[in-house]
Length: 239
Image 1 (cartoon, rainbow, N blue to C red):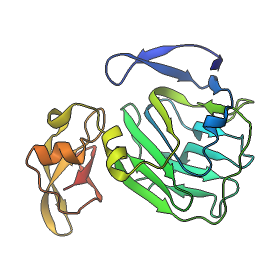
Image 2 (image 1 turned 120 degrees about the vertical axis):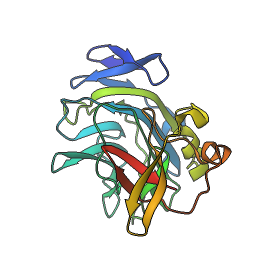
Image 3 (image 1 turned 90 degrees about the vertical axis):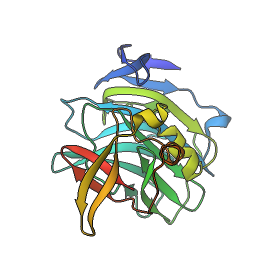
Image 4 (image 1 turned 135 degrees about the vertical axis):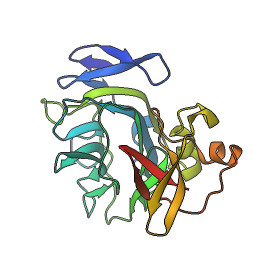
């Protein structure tokens, strides 16, 4: 593992150091057969987008757009959203449905590929899915975290607990990754108006949404509502 740029740290998700990307730094992980996960994988990370960030940014990439995978943040109308891309896929991208990732707070993002379906999760909740035509191609390029060699798509913000798995995790497993580990203490209740009337919602905490298991343990009943609602200035998930 090598750092091309500045080695800096910030406050981590759990009080320990996270890596601080300043818009000019990339972490490179040298190629290894164990990292050629084209047949199925999961990549996840906790990110905190810097308040000054404004352009498209890579979270991680293997192949520098030569056939392998890319997780990145795109921008539309000044709002960030999460995407999983590959040059060999049609369509190239699958995007998250929320399309409003907040700056300045910890957000968990994860993407999975099982050889047929690619899925996006934001704060442990499935938020984008498709079945693209095409397959990923193996390559011997390093994994680049936080940008692309040559200085393009550079990440500006904090990143913590970057993980790569050699299989597509289940929704339950990703939900567990997307819980900040605070259990029921991470759950805050509020009311929000929906087309069906007033409903209870579980707020996203600073570190993310508590897991399904946490919610059930706290006595919540899951009603199959997974659409994002607005509750003040905070993104919520309806339950």
